[in-house]
Amino acid sequence: MRLIKAIFGKDEAIPQVVHRGSRVRRALIGLAVTLIAAFGIYVVYELGRYNAGYDRQAVAQQRTELEVKIEHMESENRELRTKLAELDTIRLGRAREQSEVARAMGDLQAQVAKQSQELAFYRGVVAQGAASVGVKVEELRISASPQPGVFVVHMALVRSGRAETLAAGTVQLSVDGDFAGGDKTLDLATLSGGRQHDLRYDFRYFQDFDQEVTLPAGFKPAHLVVEVQSNRHDVTPLSQTFLWSVEAAP
Figure 1 (cartoon, rainbow, N blue to C red):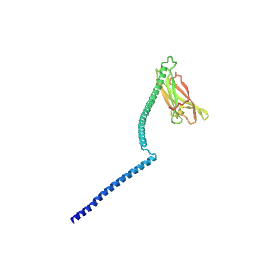
Figure 2 (tube, helix red, strand yellow):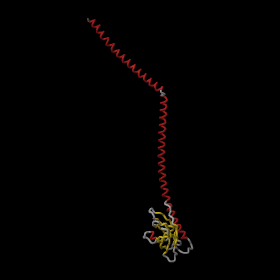
Figure 3 (cartoon, rainbow, N blue to C red):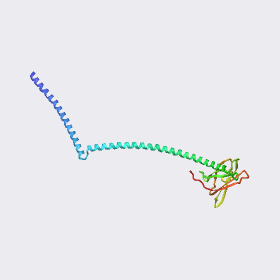
Figure 4 (cartoon, rainbow, N blue to C red):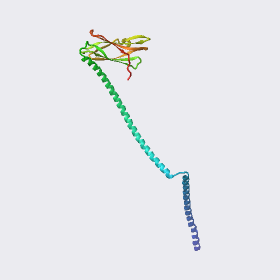
């Protein structure tokens, strides 16, 4: 009985060992089949792409070329941005320089105008043998005002002889022109709205005037008449007529 049991016991153990080995073999076989199937699918996939004209090496080369182009474009973009910043800096610097030059030119023009007036005076001072001491109009300009019909008469009076005493007197302004088809003369009282009847001067060397005048609507000016009257009776009055010409705005 023990022998039989021992035999039967061995017989019962053998199927268990055989069963475990078969399961391992089946697992290995399944894994191998899976790997082979995956490799087959990959091979079929690559063959399909090759038959469709896909070249892995060409694609890799094309990708490399595109990456190189991207790097070049980014480098050019950085250079362009740097140049743009430099140009902006230069533009701002030139704008400041132009502003400074314009301001300097304005100052120089003002100095030239002042020196011109002084030069005209000194020419009259150094003139020898002058018949009499008097006043003359050295400069006269007419400029437009922002208001319609309003103008500014810029006038400079200088001595025509030795400046041993002060020159004093009055200046009359009048404008000749056409109004409603006829000739008409407007005196300073009319031109200033009744605020002034004459201009008074009192100087040794020269004197500037900036007189605002208002022309009525429809009046067409032709001439500006300046009459200078001295307080001294031995000085002949001066009368000068100027063409009405308005200087262009700067």
